[in-house]
Every structure is written in C-alpha cells, then in structure tokens.
Image 1: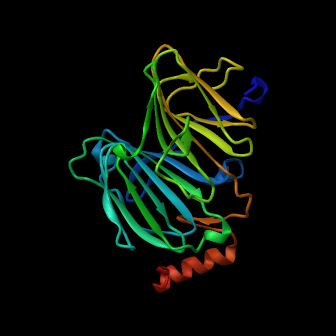
Image 2: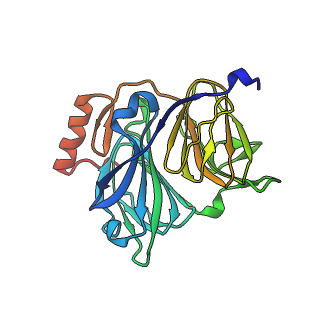
Length: 285
C-alpha cells in the first residue's frame, strides 16, 4: 500500500465523565452529538472504577431497539439477563454482542465479588431494513477469540473481521465491522489495511503512541482517535507498551431518530417504540 493512502488523524477527543444505569461512573468517549462523523457507530462508553461504590448498582432492566450493543469486559465480571431468555456472565476478555432489533429488555449487573471493574460498551446502528429484526444474543469467552502473536512481542486479538487470514468469530453483521484489540510492545510499528470508505477509529486503553507516520503527536490513555480517508492506518508505540482497540465499519448514511436507549430512522418510529414500551407491547419476539 502506498504511503499516500495512509489515513491521517481527523479528530482526537477525550471522554466526558457521566453517570448511567443506577449510578455507574462512565467515561463517554463519543455519543449523541457525534453521530454525523462516527456513522454507523453511535456511542462508546468506558465504564468502571477501582471503587465498588461507583459501579456496584449496575445497569438494571432497560429496553433497546434498533441497535446492536457490544459489551467488552477488560476487568471484573458482569452478569447479563434479557427478555429473550438469554443470560450469562461476561468475564474478563469476554464479549456480549447483542442485536436488540425489534426490541429487547435486559440488565447488566456487576458480580458481587468485583473489587475493580472496567469494560467498554459500543453501540452499533442497524440499517433501516433490520431495525425490527428478531433480537439475538451472542456471548463469547476470551478463549473464543484468536490471537496473532508477533515476533516482537505484540499481540493482536481478532474479535471481528480478519487480520492476515485470521478471522474473528463474530461475523454476518450488516455493517461488516472489524474489532481488534491490539497490544504493542515497546517501540513497535503496527500497520493495518482498512476499506477506504469505512469509518475507522482507535481508542487508547493504556500507554501512549503515535497514530500516523506523518506527524509526531503523542496520544495517550483514554483518547479517541478518529481517522480520515485512506486505506491503511499506522500506529507506533513509544518507550512503553501501547494497548488500544481498532474498530471500523461501513457507514449507513441513513437518517437517525434517537432518544435514550432506542435508535430508529424517524420520529414517528421513535414515538411508536416508547408508546409500545409503556403499553407493554414492546417485545415482538
């Protein structure tokens, strides 16, 4: 790939602290005000704390419609239950990929023995043709995801998408997302090809790095890096290891009507969803 096709940095952003659920401290990396530049991604929350009082009340029963939620646990455990009968415990390194579709009601509650908790929740929009699809729950353990161990000590965990012929287990998603967990050893270069018309971003979990070969801006922990147009990304760690996620997907370029946990295409659809929730007719399958 020629150097001129490398993606440059379009935006670097720090999260804002907020409370969600029953009072869980979260860092909102991006959300409602960023939909125009993050399409098809809607929201990314970095949640958890070393203080149980900031997360122990969890996320009690609440609805979703029209989206997919992807919960990735980094530390601690969360117990999940939903209206389809799906349930389980998301352990460190595990993922819950939930397609809310026509409607789902669920809860996510920290397991009581957690002294620390950290996870990421990403919202991925569904196209208009799939907003009312049958809800689906997929649960994965850390061991379900293949890893590529580099000679330099770096590790690439493939959650969705493909790296050097190695595919992640999460497939058949309409926006064709790629979700990589990348750990670079000290002073290591990582280059990865991405479809030219996709939205691509990185989020730094730990360490510092340079996210393009064309400048020397050092970007650190809890920073969002949104890439501009191009066909590849280039990341380099510095004097310490770097841990980040790299995510991409095909934009939908569709109208969005969004309120709380429900994302549709029109205000009429949104009103219908909340009316059905109040009437008890929200769940379709």
